[in-house]
Amino acid sequence: MTIREVASYLHLGAPEIETLVREREIPFEKQGGRVSFKRAEIDSWASQRILNLSSKRLAAYHSKSSSQVREFTPDDALMPRLVTQDRIQAELPSKTRASVIRDLVALAEKTDLLSNKTDLLRMIEEREQLCSTALPNGLAILHPRHHDPYMFSESFMIFGRAIQPIHFGAVDGKPTDLFFLLCCQDDRLHLHTLARLCSMCMETTLLDALRAADSASVMLDAILNAEDDIIRRL
Image (tube, rainbow, N blue to C red; front, side):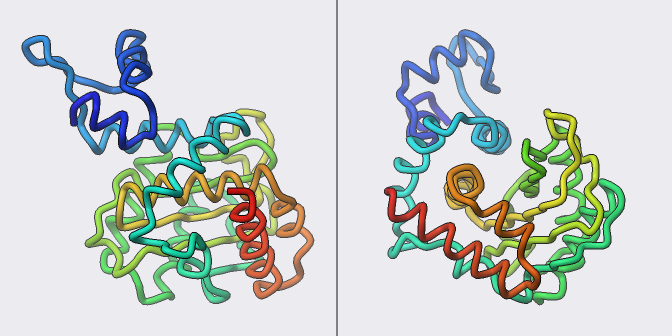
């Protein structure tokens, strides 16, 4: 990818990308004085960047990305296509970081959407080895390192609430009890959905609602309502 292509992909200006290159804050290569970027590396970098954006910058990114994915979501709503009641587990029995990943993938396997469970598990583990997807406030948004469509028949999302909070690597040092697993077949859709989900968790009462919910159906309603709230702000 060129600087202009990366700028368009990340909804940034070319000067901003050039600054990131000069400061070596973005993965790039130089060949004969020409700067280029590997799409897989940019996607991993962008995912982590979204997870760490401030509320204001996240809102700006989400607004821009919303206009770029109309082909996937003409009516703006993502969650009804991604998550259903059978993709939610109200009492996740996991007790370790490794078992969280295994249990979420096992729940995903029950949806009959997985084509390659082994590769999905490996790519999620590889992503966590790069940097934990755990965030402050007891939340983690797991996703595979690469978004290869062969691993599942359609994009989907899994959610689990751990019975016992687990230390998952959050920067605030606190344990995590709410775990999303996001699996998208398209890089642009992944980044947009990640921004949407982060916005839902940061700008609405979703996390409190998920902790207070007594069933998967109530959790699903909370997720859908939080997205409706965010869409109304676009």
